[in-house]
Length: 263
Image 1 (cartoon, rainbow, N blue to C red):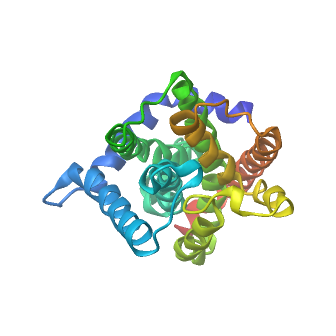
Image 2 (cartoon, helix red, strand yellow; image 1 turned 135 degrees about the vertical axis):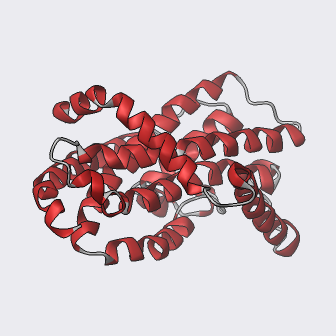
């Protein structure tokens, strides 16, 4: 991992340039352009808000408006889903770079994660507007968003390294991302609350890394308490994330020499 850190530091200008290009190419040829980064999350929030607030008449924990509870959980989830979808196919999409011996292809998943960060910032601004619209002003704990974003990016990078390498040899990996994310979404406390689970199931929910991430975003924006509560979720998250980062990087570097023969 120290070698990977040195590679990132050495290639930082290339990484930033590629991330900018990846963001621009995502909306190239569309009439609305970058405005889609606003329309897409707005449409998703509006659809869930109408269905759960007026259809199912669901109320969020502690009597909070459902829209506020939902949007603070959806914020990190959209980043993860967009980053993973882009990172999984990044090696095959950038075959012209992979074939260059001197290019460090292991930075490509990081490029996609940085490219997904701009729409994440746009969605964060929309989330703040929703909070302010309900009379909720985040307190001093909002600084914890930096930790939450870093933790989310590290988790996405570990998964992205592994998935992008495996997808070169098994294209089913990219096809399976959407159905897996759909199931994962409902296993994560975005629409529902951990308080709805029995104590035993809450411990199992802690094994889902996105549980800690979603709760960290809500701790910073909504609850106003430290993200290290409960401690079990923090320990479980970092054990899984560091293992993913190590295994993902080792897998990528082991398969890297064969990429040029396949892409």
